[in-house]
Image (cartoon, rainbow, N blue to C red; front, side):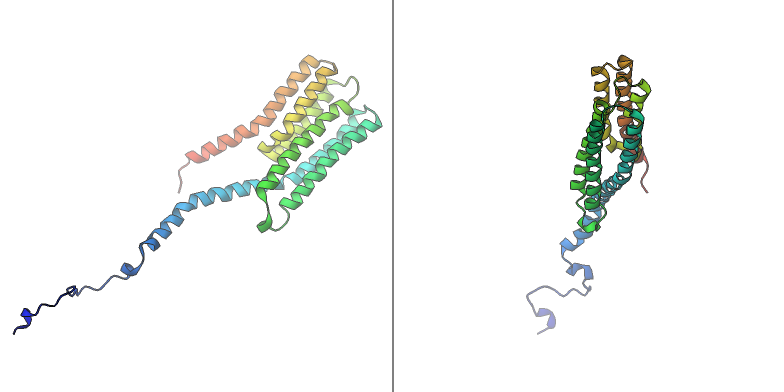
Length: 228
């Protein structure tokens, strides 16, 4: 009987060698592509965390601005009783201490233990409180009939300094300051109140909104740039 008459069941012999990648599970092929697809999201998260960390880092110079501005305001105002000046200083100092504590708790320790979102939320609330405390000085330490230049400086100089330091986040400080000082100008009938109050509100809106507009414009410009 010839060998060609033998009928052996089964898979015929294939002389071609098997490829090494044929033994790899299909899921392993998809893993690198999934990791590459996640890179943009990880990059965005890293950028957001960096921005939050920088915001927390700016709270320390913001406290210095408030301290120096408060000392200057007390020395230039010359109005109000000693009790009112002490009360305003205590309110402002409370906000400064709270922001310093939040900075130490949320930024200055090990990065692996930093609760960024929680610390940033607390800092925004503290800025809102500090702005309200500063604005209350218009009722507590201002003279009975302050000069318009003094009122404008009291409302706008610290707001502008905080905007330079905190950028878009200064909104939480500037809004209560300008609203409180403009309200005191009208309620106490200070000189040129019908002119000073609108100037304070308009300038405060510009100071609070301009960094946000610049930030949005920068992000739009970056989005239009070609990626390499």
